[in-house]
Image (cartoon, rainbow, N blue to C red; front, side):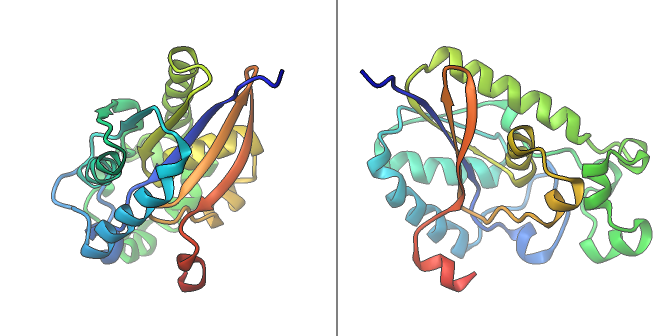
Length: 210
């Protein structure tokens, strides 16, 4: 008899105000979903309906929590906030425009994946710290929701952190990897062995648009 697998569906939040304005929002308030982001959340909610999700956890940040609520309503589920799924703390760069950051500090996004001293020196959460809390969340769900399908609504770098744990890409590859808004990254846990099922999975019409 084939054993059942635990599936982890990591969902990045829909498009938010900070994505459009190219602002390093971090954990600050005031960056809600755009109208397009709400539409993306609605569509990915429909996309997820057949997958028999049993539990939804989400980041406490507004853009992720709103996305999770929209999706949860589609399946008549509730979503529980879990701090381990939160956005990275951008430290002194919080609120800075991407162009200003690049001009003053170079490619901080790449340096983030390289573990460059500029990250800790400016109070930014390190990539290794992100990986630690996401792995802790996955371990928690593996024990609590064995052989179930779990949806985790979060942000780009927490998703990249779990991808990096499995695929171990170079920092340059992580930097170039874009996790689309309201897209799914799917992992399976088969007897404590994790593997990738999909990255940037979403409703088919978006592939030609993006």
